[in-house]
Image (cartoon, rainbow, N blue to C red):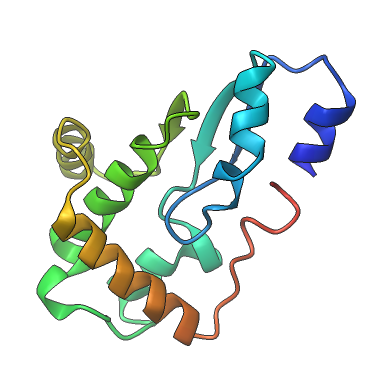
Length: 143
């Protein structure tokens, strides 16, 4: 939908789409095309794929795939934020937060580069997401 829109019209100044480690589709064609046309890019719902998979793990609705990286300590969220921020064709992201503590944790995380531990956490979460039966509803028809 978004890809078709920016291919078909020159009226856009910015485009905001779901984008994160569980819904990475926009990085393939949408973001590069937007960048080439001078259109700003904003990632929303960086923790979102599958209707909030990270939050489903946090709440216990889905078994935690990596107990040593408990969602309550923020590490999966921090890893996902750093993953999003490494996308060279992305201008900014608007992650959802529910407390000042989360704001502080993510602001600190954004200052650090994506690293091997982040990749390990996200690999485990991605496999668990695929095995959960949840659908990546956020990336469908967007990119």
